[in-house]
Structure formats: C-alpha cells, structure tokens
Image (tube, rainbow, N blue to C red; front, side, top):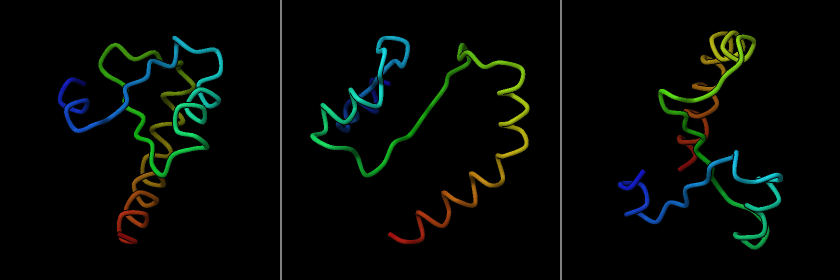
Length: 71
C-alpha cells in the first residue's frame, strides 16, 4: 500500500467508514473516475462471496479489458 500511496493513491479501509461511498464523494468533490478494490490475504469474504467471485471473474476481466481499451 505504501507503494500505491507514493503514486498518489488514496487508501481506504471500508471497515473504518459507515458510508464509504459518501466519504469518497466527499473527498473527491463528487466522485472518482476509477476505483480499484483490492483485498489482501486477510480479506474478509463470505462463502457466498467466494462463489460469486469465482463465477464472475471472467465477466469482471472482460469489463476491465474493455475499459482499458478505451484509453
């Protein structure tokens, strides 16, 4: 995370905010162009979340590739 911060990334722990989306809108004055949601080895995910992630990873990758191709 320190490496990301050195490039100007804002690091947020979702557990520290009741309304993370509202906080992001507040600090960015309306919203952001891009968000990267990263979970480390100690990330908390329910069993159903793991199943959803496994089933949707290809859709997410395709979406990211389409997004990146725009730039």
